[in-house]
Image (cartoon, rainbow, N blue to C red; front, side, top):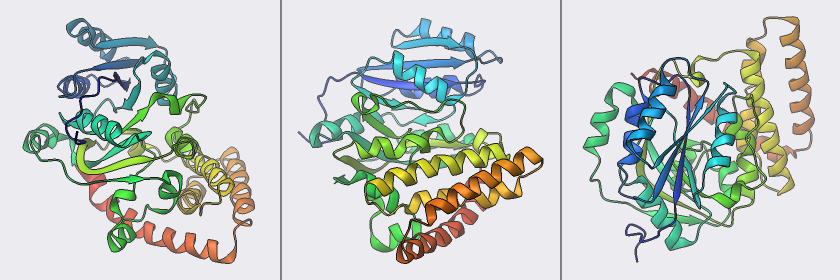
Length: 337
């Protein structure tokens, strides 16, 4: 059996946090229900929507028995994800943002890879495109043949050290790169046992990433772009610019930093994440903001003092290179429509 021809019958739970997504949700759910992998359930968590999304969730559930709906008061994406994990019954778990799309063969590919390699997680690449081109691009690439894949037996190390695009391309290690984002990945449900997304935080995925990867034996990564990350200028990640927002990022990466250090892994990605401290400083608008910034600044400094000269030099070099990539991203991908 090849990884592209899976015969696994494991149930896949696709968790979709829903908040005021009436204009996008139907297309998102349809892309999931159109998967060539049929043994799935779609878990829609309506997180206090006020735009008709709640009613749309119920309509989608009435039209297809594979769709399950849970309504709750607004608690944020972490709360919705945690609820989804409680409700999901699948042996395998994945997530999809309520305004993104999944290629028809995403679950087939990722489930096949997990079965063939006995991995704890499989992941694919993604396409960054403007929202207006989502359906067209999905159609254009629906029959693209599957490509290469690799098995990573040190996922926590790969996550922390392989993140710079230039380095990935220069060293030819693109498939060792994967992010903390929960979409585009298929997990064994058991890896989430005892792990919860921190409620009320923006960087909820970063906060638990290292804890997840540290307990995985291996991850299988393929070069197939099967998740469609649609860029919208009004998304939360593109719109927030408060001290609280940047502080969440800094503190989440600090947790990642601590786990990496405990495993004797160079915390390069966490270092770069904690450098969002400079953006936090620029966002200070009140005495409360200033106090939070000073607390975060002290926290970051105390962690960096534990690094050797060469560790700080390596982390610093990768951080500077990453800053240049972010500038390019903000001028291109961020502005897509």
